Image (cartoon, rainbow, N blue to C red; front, side, top):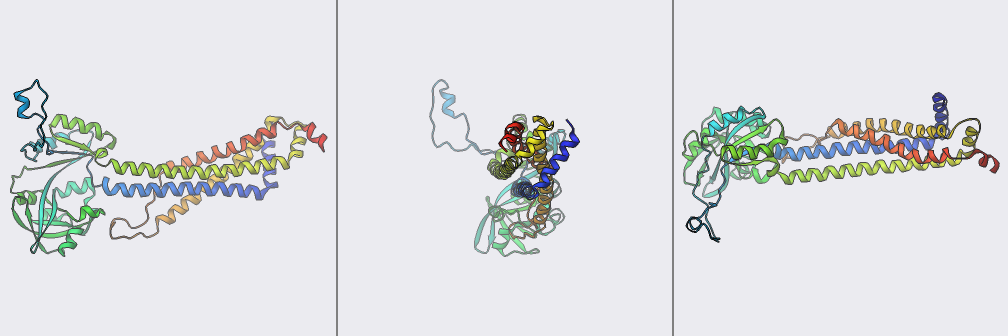
Length: 417
């Protein structure tokens, strides 16, 4: 077996039908380019949509939920009987997390934890003349909130640090600010559910991209929120935990709930619907991309089949002068792989170029202030998968025609002529 001779013969056959070869290579190029572009764009879109939630959501949230008592007085009176109690009211319990400072210090020492941020959730009314708008004020530590959840990226007007530098200040949600016609420097009045009132100075506007949240949600510092609620300076309702590995969140949430005797919810449980949507979009992208590659493979298969039929005489002569069936097999496998490698390489370059063009197209919308261009994900795994699919698909497309060519009997072909 002379490898150099096989390569020379393969190149001669490729150039002899260069138009068909070019069509096959263009088919592979188009398929790979669309595969890479489609996956990059769809996964970039997934990252964008997930980021709207994931960037602003703790991996683990510790809090006290409002629950009914599992043991009712009648159960204590008759523990041996099965009791049915309806319309049970929640037990009277505080939303505050007890020993929150000690819990946060203990969690910070956990090597699996990236950071911890305290939070206070306060139900309020925004007073606009004689109208009261329902809303929520989140008391936060601005520095930790920005470090762990990129808070400053969503503050479209003003400076987030003014929350801690200016007393009695507030960053309004975009929807709230529009309803109240409030601008930076204005003073707004809010009332808690217990009737406590406080005037707050607007120092910024926050826009998450989720309009339902932006119409009710605003932010104050921890101390301002505690003052608004009339509680002590150790009052905290939520502990937000960011992990180094998000996949550990479900197990660690159960661990923290049992150890610190609080309710806990992990990010996968809190946002399962978003993960489902991302998975479906990714599956669709892969399905379309693989379909394009398979179609290109059929094109190569047809071209090689036609080449074999047209080159019956040449194949018979090659076998008559000493080429074995294995040599003929390798010739057509080499032809198929040459088309796949060349078309695949060009497809990767074209796909990267198209992705780069899309990535630079302006995409400005008021609902997504942090997004300036169309999202593209340049994950190298997409290019690796495309390369493997290109080689495998073209190999399979050339394998069956090459087997047919290797089994040609030169005596029958020559006698037929």
